[in-house]
Image (cartoon, rainbow, N blue to C red; front, side):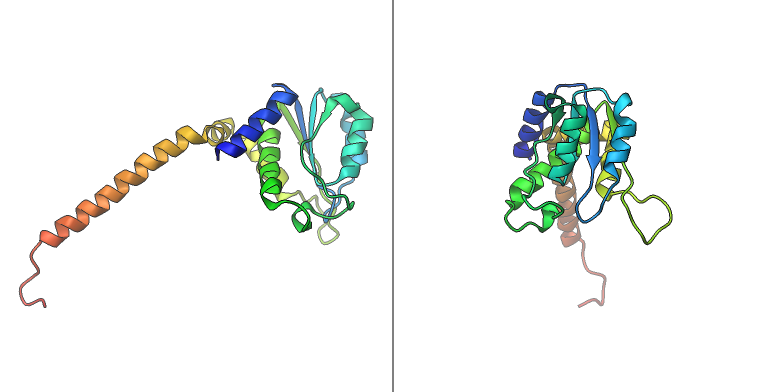
Length: 185
């Protein structure tokens, strides 16, 4: 929607055009984010956009990379470890806008990093679905541009829908003029 695109563009303007995106899930899923971030530190170019669901993760990033180098615009719950989507005090509309903006900001980053989440049920690494979606959008910049150009995309989609409806109406109209086969009631 225009409201979401405006929020995204305002956030992007505050960060700048060339930045590093990092997604860290650490509430109902946990990540060994300190180890991963310390290893990543020499390779990260500032500014950095950190999309996370945990205030402690954000605080750690600001200490590690510098307070003025780390950006995040999401309203995080006061209770550490509580998922944003389970917090009844969170404004659902704002939470959804924040989540979509996080996704778009991660996908728009010059470089994007995310880490495996801990999962005792499997032997191999497991990744957040949100991280994977951001990665796929980051890799497919054509799709990301289509998504970000929603107004233009929606115009073409509306034209296509109008044409389809017109064709169905014409088909129905033509069928109404076709005489019924003999012997049909």
